[in-house]
Length: 289
Ligand code: SF4
Image 1 (cartoon, rainbow, N blue to C red):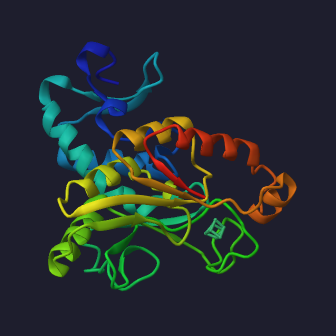
Image 2 (cartoon, helix red, strand yellow):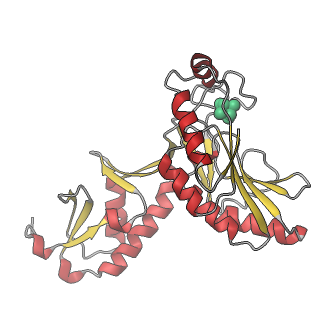
């Protein structure tokens, strides 16, 4: 190989460049954010880079001592780091939506940005914004649920036979739709209620979503419906910091065995859920059980 010396290679720290947790398999770069997991085949990623930067003669992945993923490219002297980083980000943002999975349900996850075939975010109960003619707008960012409640009216959960894929909405698109509805309806004092056909706390952009819903001056309340599966002290603190008004926490039963049965999961932990409910009570967030 012509460029074996490290100093002749440009080093791109992908773990710092991309807003995901990264890992490598033999064949793919794996990008994870919450339940959202995407794989980009290494071969196609490198090929696309080579098409744009014909002076590339050597390229391989590596890891530093902190476990961060590095892309080593040579010859350094013939390459523009900023241009490479920008192209890499572009390739990943184009490729990733085609290769996403929901790790909570193990189903393919369809990413819906604003330009997704003109797909509207109003009119579906699966995702988007639901206006039922009151001052409350339901904001539904993601489908899919980690629980398997036997009574689930929408047949969600990893064991569902009728749900073969999940959907996730680009936060920019969700926020612009919410703002559009508020301005069209001239709604003052709106409640943005984040819920879902499934578990909305699986949305990897939840904290950002709460924060951005507040940026509309006509928002009076931001509330969240949850089955509690993804609750922990850290996320409660983060949601409290962005002024989430209320959590509506669904608990199916106050008997531990029955709660497991009704959640459809042997690892459902009622005691932990009740501890977290207490933790919410001690935060700035109101709790509705
Ligand atoms: S928590 Fe709700 S959406 Fe999830 S399986 Fe149970 S009833 Fe269905």
